[in-house]
View 1 (cartoon, rainbow, N blue to C red):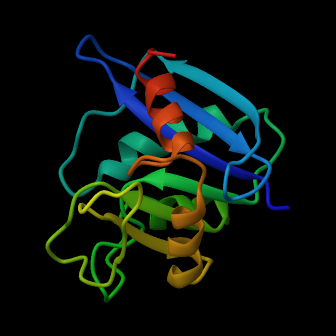
View 2 (view 1 turned 180 degrees about the vertical axis):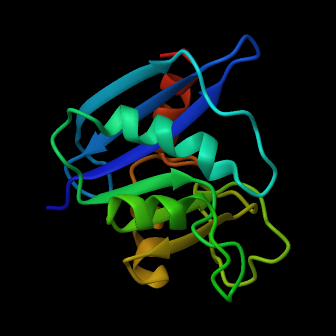
Length: 166
């Protein structure tokens, strides 16, 4: 088994952020073994091209104090182009030393290397990138994640937790 976490962060108009973590006993998230939410009173301002500066502290905070995960799934891209221009997932991989799977809901024009995964009968794909695990393996994990919808249940759940809608 590979203890796998999915993280998401929601930013508030009034300031601060809320980070959420859902942990599965395996990359398919068939069994959820832990959930955690962490509120940050302050976050860095949005800086185009440097989103990771805002997101990494929240991800670190929600992972702090939990049993370590061996694989992390982030909302977004690991790398933004075939040449490896880093996206959020690459920064998370470099900082935490964990394999990271990026699952994006929308196409990014330069991310021509992303694997398209269709789920739940949807014609609209998810775009999967990865660091520390082959992209084909990452795409297979996303394809097999629990849930009947386009977005796997664990990613829907972590989004709801981050938004305070749990």
